[in-house]
Image (cartoon, rainbow, N blue to C red; front, top):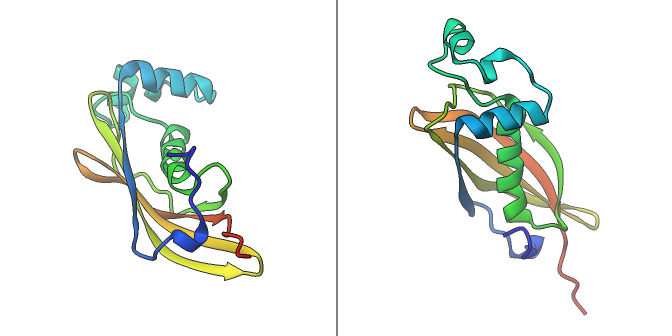
Length: 147
């Protein structure tokens, strides 16, 4: 949970982050598109979405990126700092009635001076398999202070 702080010293390479599920509803998709000002009709009008090749309205990029950030935040805690997100690529549409599950794993960890870095391999899955990614998030975590 984001309110429990994880320290760099306690992270292990290969460690999984807890999967996080996001059930998709029409309401969630329309609210997310409106909140980030993505008024493209493919995100709220099924006829327009179908004409573009999708089976229904679908989640926009910022909603899906936010899912990655929320899953990473749950792992790094509030004192962790997300430094970079890369490799984010949508492979399939995420539509109402599906659940997007964000997964991740500690790809590597390293120190640079007084900073402890982790690179999290990230991806999202829906009923068609990997729907977003694979990509990564690089973050810093606090170090335990030893006396």
